[in-house]
Image 1 (cartoon, rainbow, N blue to C red):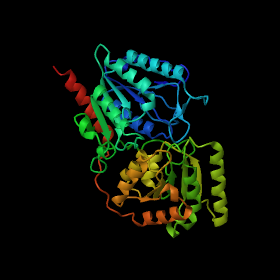
Image 2: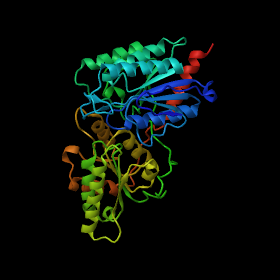
Image 3: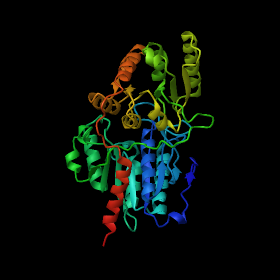
Image 4: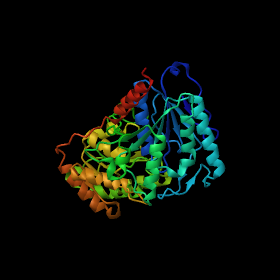
Length: 421
């Protein structure tokens, strides 16, 4: 069941077929990119498969094609960041959110908790991020803890945190984790990135932390959009950037890079998958630039397809000759999961440090080529693409990618332990 009214955010109605299943409320808020939503959606499908009844509460703008499976989707009045610094949040009308907006969302979240009566409440990223929304998240947690049968409280957090601007912010994270949480699920593998790499106070919450492995979408059965071929991506160079809010420069560089990428890659079809957060006008301009590049190349067949991001991306990635992308959690781990040669250009705007750190650690193992965003040019991208394609037969290390299933098992075990006589 989906509730998508962004104005009044009606509460989920009881579903008798789900009434006997353990209930989970999963809260997620994305502000710029859509990676948080994709990871949370993958986790939600695994929880549903495990037998939980999930109410998926989204505080960001709706994400086209988001697959939350059989979960109840509740869309709150949405908010997004106005820029890469994440300090100013606005609603659908572009106005900065105010105290009335915050109180309304707080009250909606409390009402959802009281209506659903979850056995478990999961907050995505918080208390290790989303500090500016603590005014709604903390009351939601307190409402869940005040239920006749208090909910277990779990955090769902990626392997790498953004460096906080002030050291005291880390202590605030620690204090909230110790005060409110029963479990911190770190969706990563310490063999690749230990959580303490970006959270030095890890030892003080070690009893709460469980590594689950990386949460990766392994579903290759997503159908392509109408009119698209299920074989698309085969032998192609795929250029992608998730939601695409800050991806224009990458796509323009890729169009210009094809001609200089070497005889193998320049002869292949390049498919640009443009995220839905990039304006239609920019999409049209990218298509014109790709057409102009084809004309200059005097090729009989078009060398580019420029289209919107697709739900069958994971399947396409598994068939591709090369991936070129930013270095968000989802795409980078999907690259490793599918063992496809790859070039990544980590997003480094604002206070962002996460993408660059993860890309560097993966590159140290010889798995990907990295082009710094500050040095992104067509020539640099073409050279990196040629190097990546030349090492197609590399050996891939064992990295735990079963985080979605492991998280569901962990929560089921924790709940079973709690209710055991």
